[in-house]
Amino acid sequence: MKHILVAAAAAASLSFAHSAAAQPPANAQPPAQPAADAPPPKPNDYGDPKSWLCRPGRKGDACDIDETATIVAADGKLTRETWAADPNAPIDCFYVYPTISTDPTPNSDMTADPAELNVVKQQFARFASKCRPYAPMYRQITLAGLRRVLAAAAAGGNPGAIFEQGVQYDDVKDAWNYYLQNENKGRGVVLIGHSQGAFILTSLIRREIDGKPIQARVVSAILLGTTLEVPKGKDVGGSFKNVPLCHSASQTGCVITYASFRSTVPPPANTLFGKVADPTMTAACTNPVALAGGSGELHAYLDRTGRTITSTPQLKPWVTPEQTIDTPWVSVPGLLTAKCATNENATYLEVTVNGNASDPRVDDITGDIGAGGNVAANWGLHLIDVNLAMGNLVDLVGQQARAYAAKGGSR
Image (tube, rainbow, N blue to C red; front, side):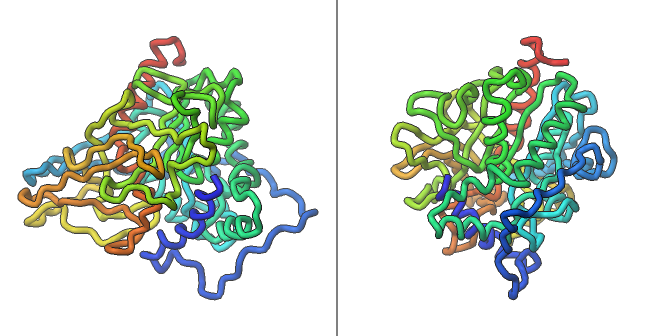
């Protein structure tokens, strides 16, 4: 975990290099550490609706948005795809977002800024077609606060503990407990997290769920942009003692996890994901296209403007000659395929872009950290880990919900 978190601090700034507004002031100082005898932060009140980005059926919140898409076929034909949330969804989803806060303090405040609203749009709102959405605000470690990770590493400490303890973890735990006590009412729930959110949920599962009665209500966990350990040749026993990897859409109580890299830019020796230190362990990869193994077509939902969770890189027209696309999302059937792969450095989700210069559709995607010859290969496609397989993941949640109900688990 250490090498991932150390680089997370460095690349957090890199990923925001495309947006001047996202950078801290030039004279910003490293965040001061709290005094050893400082009182702990006051717990959030998750009974306050303002403490949630998303709650079911609430008008005007971060999940109450337009998820309409334009399907861009290889021949250039455009088709509009509608979308609607399901107010009667049989299960819930509980989402913890990645590091996106541009607040100048070590931990973010509890005000939903454009960064929080955008990441819910990018990674979570679409799931509301299959589950009731719950997304708590939490005082996450900000981009500025990640400097402490570098300091801890330089001092020989364990920077992984920064995510696993402190106000950011406590907030998510408090939100989870509030949800269980007041909202869940015995329903199945899918846990969804990316990057910092996945680290926190991994710790929450290990401490509060794994091997405990509440585990029976977990339909699945989708933990992306992180590295989970499993013993070589096994599906359980590393990061979690009793929560296995998913191998079919009808399997419940399991984990879907991956970190994505281009087939043309595989993980280098200094990769941030897919590598573990213990020689008896390996990094887990579950292909959301083909949980049983093999390759298949990614059902991506990409931002029409090219925006990711942190930046808006330059985007080529989706089709030539250029046509007007007025939906927030674009789907590109057949352009992207994926399989789990292993090289000498890592185990990862290998994404192949099947561009064809002879057809009118765009031949590539955006989502790398950096551009041109300055792509940060060790980060892979971290900024669009979720977008790449959004349609596949939403479909899997729907199938797992049906499987959970068939086993008598729904309420």
